Amino acid sequence: MPFSNDKRKKPRYTVFMELRVLKYFLEAARLGNITKAAEKLNVTQPTMSRQIKDLEWELGEKLFERTNYSIKLTPAGELLRERAEDILEMADKTLLDFKALKEDEISGDISIAGAESKNISFLAKCIKQIKAKHPKIRFHLYAGDSERVLEKLDKGLFDFAVIVENVDLKKYNQLTVHAVDRWGLVMRRDSELSKKDYIEPKDLFGKPIMVSRQAIIADLPRWLGDDTKKLNIAATLDLTYNGSVLAREGVGYLLTFEGLANTGRDSPLCFKPLMPELTTPMYVVWRKGQNFTRAGKVFMQALKAALE
Image 1 (cartoon, rainbow, N blue to C red):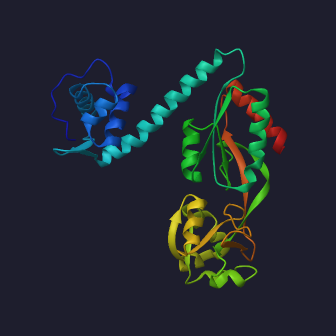
Image 2: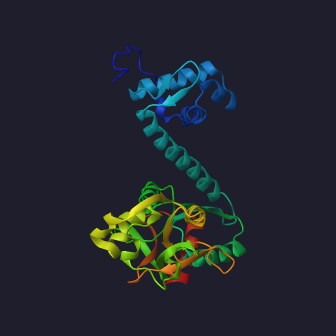
Image 3: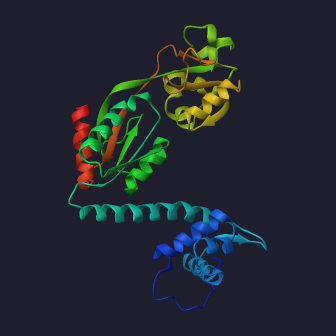
């Protein structure tokens, strides 16, 4: 390790556990310049440089490659950036949860992550109902693929997750949403496949296809089997809106859930369902044994009333 020969006496405190130092590190990584990061955080450049060097020494890894004009993250630095973001997010969330305990009125923050779907209308109704009765409860909604969402749920960074695939019931409690998402193809109205009433597997072969990375792994194999490998994947994406823009410009055909892209009469795009039909169920999940705040308990009651 690059710092194994460092003979300095170990500091009395652990640099890594100093949230302030992690903030220094993240700001330096974001700006690519320690001097600018120090100015942004109102500390001196020597102080920030020394703290980051102490952090490198403690971890035994070089975090930045330095040049005369800028810095960039090493592979170890990239790993720490991801972990540091989670650590600081959890610290902020913990402080807010404890602050809410002191309020007479029920308040607090609820973090919910999930996939894009028109079927989250139940979530909107629950939030509206709760806000009418408990206006100090704040909701934070995040989007992401199931793997990353569940990883953050496991760490306690999210309180709930709305996902569109089966999960390990040994780890999570779940409520089933009484609706499924139907898959189909979004395309320009003047495209070759727009005249068809539905899309069969053979229709896709040779066509430029845009689809989420998660669907390639979890959903399309249920419909295409081994023929998934025959698809010409022109682009992978996380947000359907971005895919609809690409489809509108003629980049390719977008495989997605019905109702996420504007395919109304005034749109240049149309939606054609897959045949045989491909649908995906939806669930609300949370960690087993999870200790909810008062706000979390209120939200749980609303969810159960809406879905059970």
